[in-house]
Picture 1 (cartoon, rainbow over the protein chains, first blue to last red):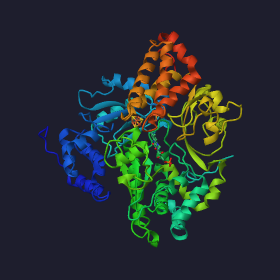
Picture 2: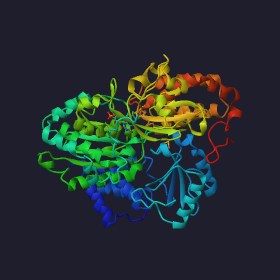
Picture 3: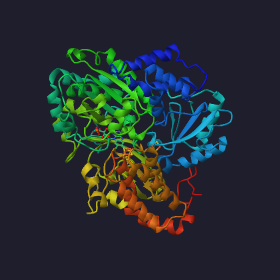
Picture 4: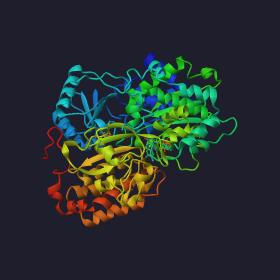
Length: 180
Length: 448
Ligand SMILES: Cc1cc2nc3c(=O)[nH]c(=O)nc-3n(C[C@H](O)[C@H](O)[C@H](O)COP(=O)(O)O)c2cc1C
Ligand code: SF4
Ligand code: FES
């Protein structure tokens, strides 16, 4: 154990986790690993600490290393602390053609951070990501489970302001879209 | 003339996402027909007769794939739907699942009946979480209506279908990486053979098909394979969903009859409505980031001067010298101001980022290509660097475990083949071009 915090799913999350584990044939419960890591990330402040990963390992009765090697492979899992709103801007081809670089530069300037960093107040983390399947409505960004498409710099400003005002953590497993 | 629509015919109908409205418009009639009037073998025969080819990118005949499925006694078989959709420029599966989730669920149940699969999984990329939830709702509705679960529609056929979310990895779209991921592991592609048809999920015989492929089984069962085969052109039968993006007036998802001329697809008001801001078309990546890029002249007309059509054969006409591929149907248009070199750097960075790292040609080669392109873009490149790029891509192609290596090599080869002059311009004059012609300014479209 690398941290002191005690990790435990709420009863509701535990019920979801158990429902997921029943989807696979007997003896193949490891298949639930990725869905459970999503639940853990949503429940434990938006990132997977070693303690959180060890907890998931114990639920599935597998070795912690089996969890670490998977968590580190997939880009949606955060292995470091992140802000309440993780802003993920698509930087791939179609978005790039439509001005994604401007979106990133604009956010970097506005939040005084570089891509990959978190603001001092812990509100925002800026990430650049690969194609999110919104290429026809480029440029776009995702925050939590929600897509924000056909972006302009004004829209980005309004979005960040609203998020700051609402001051809530946004995670993939819940949607609470900011209306623009 | 509007082309025939088979998958998106009803996508404008209000409430079509719900089971009730979907059924009001003929939904689940194919499943009833399959379970009550057909044998599994007959369904496989209809799919063969339809000429349907996999819509995930490779275009492999679906009926043939299904007939390869091993059927050892007492061993479970699986159908796995590939909803990973991470090929840059591709967003059709998302659209279909979001709008008409039940067409996929109906296709999953009917296909599973044909294959003898008691359980199926829809593996969807994690970023599409809200779509996964839409699918889960549709599945819950189907269970409630007796369309999933035990003894479906009193046919004696039992089936369970589950949604599995991924967590952000392009490589998990490759079918064996997808199966690894579904087993709770890193998405490292497996060496083939054995193919999934023999040893797939949990070592059991498995069919992996794209979302659009499985949805197409619904109209094939409804109308018959021959009717499906009568749509389209030659061996490109039926309809195809095209994701159109880039500098187009009307980007979006279009269902086309295979065989529509590329020129009509780009310029007619029925489809993309031409290039934005009255600009000229410079180049097109016709089938997702992995296929060769073609300059405007060659995408509109083949090297023989014939009109290029949106079909597997016509897009491939001329081989890699002057043709490309239909791929996943991710159609990316670039206007005259686009820097092909910078676009290529963007692609190369993508493949470097997404390489799983198992094979050295792919792991190292993609990194070198990205670095060299960066050097050229920065105005520090030499002509020898362009040749080196060519050399590296040629040493990746065909030398790796999975086709991601090829997918990384082809964009480089085609960009150099068709746009060598532009690379040379960067070498000679890179410092001045840098940051000028790289990209549009977002709001005012004025270059810096
Ligand atoms: C790197 C890579 C990524 C792929 N991504 C996808 C994908 O996102 N969706 C998909 O359906 N097929 C994808 N494929 C193709 C699959 O391996 C497989 O051929 C396909 O799912 C088969 O289904 P189909 O026959 O219905 O097309 C990818 C292949 C490779 C090599
Ligand atoms: S080609 Fe690349 S992505 Fe495919 S297995 Fe090899 S290293 Fe991994
Ligand atoms: S390129 Fe940005 S969403 Fe596809």
